[in-house]
Image (cartoon, rainbow, N blue to C red; front, side):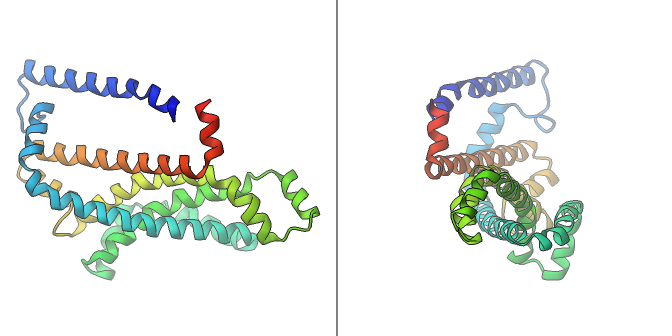
Length: 254
């Protein structure tokens, strides 16, 4: 953690420099606001429209969290089943891969047709986006467990359940958290996509209304808040990882 904080100034400096270049270029080239607003104009619009934007932001947060929990729970459950039942893994693992070959932007309208314009199809979209990274990451973590340690526990008389709970699952935790980081950012993307298809509130709805009225500054406000939300979720997952996997945090702080 100390190492991360010590290096944190580098990306912050790069972002600040990019914003300064963007601001200067917009002013020198007199770029129209409707085409590419300057960062200062985007910030002013974000502050001015916060009262109208706030409920959209909160709605997307709630939808992202619910979908993330559903996707992660389903993904870990699928990974555990496929790992403990090799025959099931051989039969269904190719289907798991094929499920990601269908573009979510194509599948989402079908979910709306099947389940209507309520919350359910939106949660399903986020779940479908989130479950794959965590499933693959968990499966890889389970399979990378040292075979020597597995053989040692088998010789000690450990059952399959004990080997999984005391060896394979703890060993797979770093891989699982890697999948969680990806799924956390994907959950926001899935929420925005689901809101595009049919909703009365959310960042996706706000972006659609802003785009249709050529309010490019509001579109960028929504984009920056999406980036902030993804970064916030990512930081929360990292913090949770540091708390639960203390041996890894100790190694990184050395």
